[in-house]
Image (cartoon, rainbow, N blue to C red; front, side, top):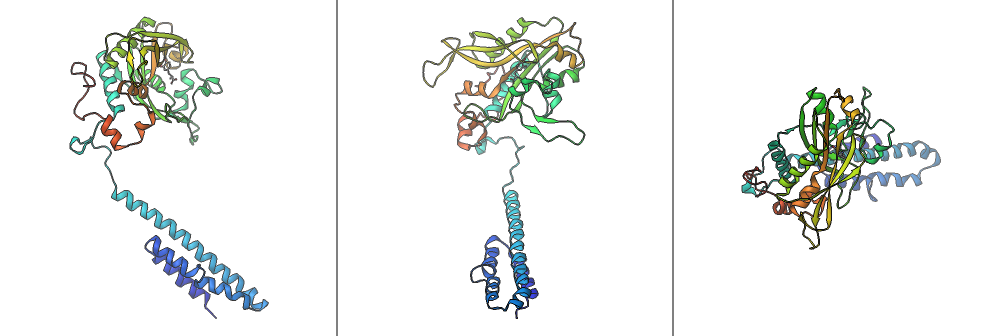
Length: 360
Ligand code: DAH
């Protein structure tokens, strides 16, 4: 009679010694396959007397299970090792600047980000930053969107599991929480910041990506009014689209963190297919939301709302890049297709400046 224990230890040793998936599969065929040693053993059960079967049956099946389990474990190990080896051999230092001699280019989003920063730097704005994984409190509550407020449903949020200390986080659904961070950090006015960055919502089609970009602007001081907001939006659009003549339209809107709230559209002409022209035509292009910072938001950030007022806006950066550079599908930004990057990318050393030209 076959010594099951020694057969098992031999098979387990073979499994452990299998150096790749092909070798492991050969062991599987030689043991559990139709003509394999374990299968052959199981086939002898029929010939055993009922008493013998009672004793041998569990031993045979135990062997079969042990072999199957060891193969599964080894298979997972080999897959992990193969992945590690692949990752090690394909290591890319993503922090390296694009090398023009390798055909590396600046991504249109990075380009637009630089352009916007240059425009606002010229207007005296600093750049403020916040994390992608944001406190629920900053993304919503301090912006006057308390828990259970229906406005939370306006934004399809990616929630992060609650932390041990009870604080809850989200992937920020907009750049507006950076308003809160900027106010808390400054402690007192004047504040004049923009904050471009990544934002996240559960949404995906040709015009929506689950990760997208916004640029937030915030100004708080004594005597700030809607006229300042309008002037800033106008100057920004003229500089960004690199045209002297634009026409803006403000529509009343609602955001819990502004009062009043406005959305801005820019006049454009889309009558020629595949082309868009600004400043003329009968179409309107949506830029994004804005308003006078809500008194409660100022107070939540420790500011005296009797004394200070502010304006803010949050525009979709990807959409602005798509319009300026004629990119039809938002998803192509994030597909890392080298041909696309070569076509739409920018030369690495052409840093956008107002006097040197933003996009030339
Ligand atoms: N955070 C808003 C959104 O993503 C956009 C927005 C509206 C930003 C009004 C603002 C604002 O700063 O004042 O839908």
